[in-house]
Image 1: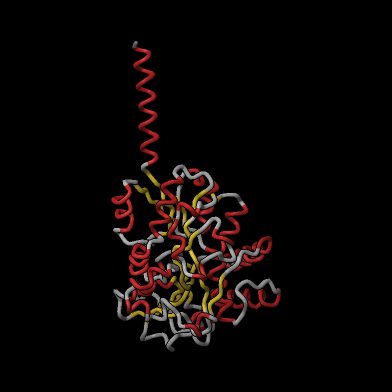
Image 2: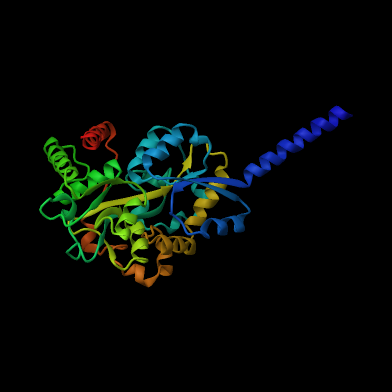
Length: 346
């Protein structure tokens, strides 16, 4: 009888562990990328507990997935240009569209994107630009020019660049009037020469990732920095001496998406979370806080009017042509990696 009771207890214990796992979802996401009440609202509505871990770069996220995170997390939020890499490495599970009915809310430009035809592995979370945060009394122009960083004759004070290979070099290529995905040797030589010259400037304050650059502008330690538009605008709201703009020459555009790792422990909860994010009102709550533009067409009617009219969030049609999307370059990615290593070490 004791053996029977012990066996029964072990079965019940295992069942309780499985039930607990079903009630928990693990999210791996950029820091400062959702309002404080966003996850608790989902937990309250579904009874699913969410554990959140944060990363500060795509390189960090991919390294964590390859080190075992692919079986630890249920939802991740990668950027568009790393999607082909994640797919080719077989790190993503296919999304069951039947379990995400709110996919219908995505605006047409985010349906079947070039990096994920048919939205097989992803659903857009937020999109935006990589622009310039600056001190309004120091940096001229409306909008200002990238020249205050990339042209030594136009620099007006300390500046901070972003510590992200493709996004940093893409911003420099925008200033140069070049394709951000160029592999032309002449373009890349000119890019390298310019970046090495920028690094030698007495105003160069280094490369920063995350929110460090915007903090330096707010503190007055820098007059300009390359930051994501939502990060910059949230800081500007608290610091009227600073501004944010998409520079005159154009900027890198990005799309971050919701994805499910290949070996996610709780894919059912992952699908429910993705569907929740894509609800019209939830999508608006998210973008009204992040101040990134929403990819959710149904959410637009709930977006704050001031944000809808802000060109730094929703660029006018004529500026959209100046935005460039980074592409995965396959074997040619190494060209940018080698160029970046040379720039960083010299």
